[in-house]
Image (cartoon, rainbow, N blue to C red; front, side, top):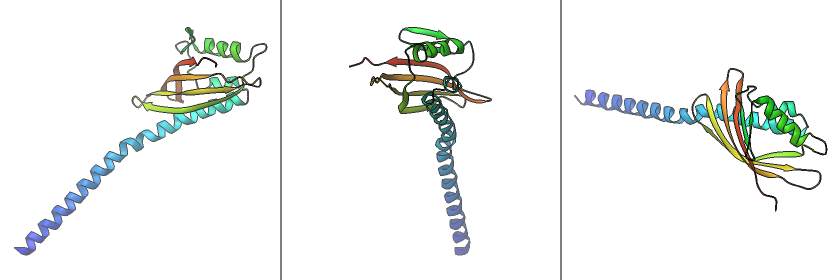
Length: 162
């Protein structure tokens, strides 16, 4: 009888330990499962900054969904479509007397909204050769496509210069 009781106790301890171990793994698996997606998004944004800083606007635009359904909101204006967003950047940063400057993204916050959608918030900061430092905030909506994450909506605001 004592032998059977000991066996039952060991068996229950084994089951309890296994159940807790399994629970612990499933609880940590969810945050870990989102980490690769967040890393992919951060990599995309980092690649955009690198492209911008080498004057490669086409490389910067590779982070955007190349579709007429892309939306870009800034300064009370809407650029509808990838081509319109490209032309806006060309006009504002590559036009006569314009420069792209040195771009930095700061305080990035990546929130996954599901397996195929994410919201990113952050700050942007440009340093221009004339000493000006335009900066502001942005909110991005990204979607995962077969070729990877792409920005499908960009809402960027500029802070007032002081």
